[in-house]
Length: 143
Figure 1: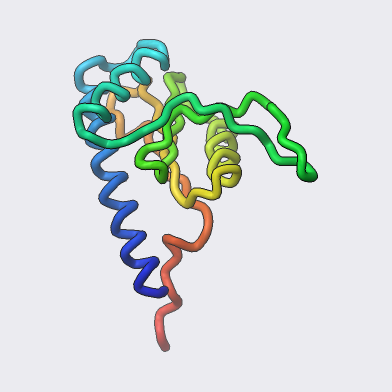
Figure 2: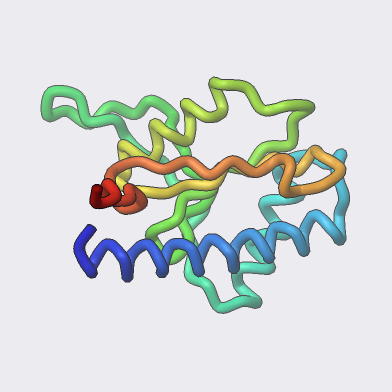
């Protein structure tokens, strides 16, 4: 792993920690059981208060053989133009939710995303960290 990846890994870990803290604050205030849109609005407010830049509900086309196709892909949040967030308020996360965020990560060429289900008693039980690329790969240990 080169030094750039180490610095990038540290940056992502710190950003993830900050964002998860804000998500926990939203969950602490609102609790489980609301619509996803309520958590999205509250999280947007918390991100603003924390002075983190973000874009929300961005439409993303699919590039197919050089043609942009509007397939209805919409990213809930892109924080600091790096970390993607997909919010849910469901009884349980399913593989399709994981696949959805993984698709967004690949379309955006981003290494890290958080799948966050607010409909749980303890928020961290509803969080999944999804990684693509080699930013977080550790080198093999020397023998």
